[in-house]
Amino acid sequence: MKPCPHPTVLATLTLALLAWAPAAGADDGRRRAAVPPFAPYQQECAACHVAYPPGLLPAASWRRLTGTLDHHFGVDASLDAATTATLADWLAAHAAPSSMNPPPQDRITRSAWFVRKHDEVPAERWTLPAVKSGANCGACHTRANEGDFDERWIRMPR
Ligand code: HEC
Ligand code: HEC
View (cartoon, rainbow, N blue to C red):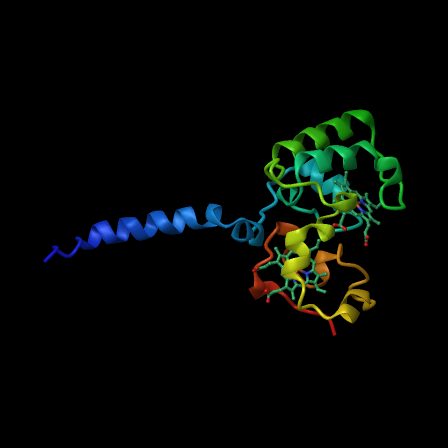
């Protein structure tokens, strides 16, 4: 008969597995897509919507978005060249791995994982006055600004 593994070995294994788990499934990573603190990002990119976690889009998408801020989804979100360059570099450095394909219109809300994760949200919910659009993450994810999308913090407007 095999000897029972020593308890500390088991504990170490469990800890190792726990530490490894977030990286294992991309979805788990997204659930807590923490926004690294960066003052210029909060200042310039969280006025009209939440500070989207940079890890939710690949660098190619962020480059395109920051390169077209003067016509940004129907609004002018342009910044001076130096700030734009700073934000573009920072976003690219914290972006999703380049294995993620840029979603249509470089929208987080058009990426395959987003559509899959939200397929149980009734269609009429997206157009409620308190929601307006899927891009308004904070309407349902009360900790969206910190990049915490855990189910515990979801409050769906009715
Ligand atoms: C003047 C307001 C304004 C500012 C400032 C602004 N945005 Fe936006 N942004 C919008 C609007 C409006 C939309 C479209 C929202 C919708 O479809 O409901 C949008 C959408 C987005 C989306 C796509 C969301 C989706 O549908 O998945 C991304 C990504 C984004 N913005 C990034 C940025 C970044 C990065 C900055 C800072 C450089 C920024 N925004 C600054 C107004 C703004
Ligand atoms: C109308 C409300 C609503 C809006 C707006 C919304 N979500 Fe969600 N989100 C949900 C619901 C409901 C779920 C599903 C939770 C479940 O699996 O039961 C979900 C799930 C998620 C998950 C997976 C969470 C988990 O624990 O598996 C992520 C990540 C997520 N949303 C990110 C976003 C992002 C980013 C935005 C904005 C671009 C957004 N959501 C906008 C309601 C919303």
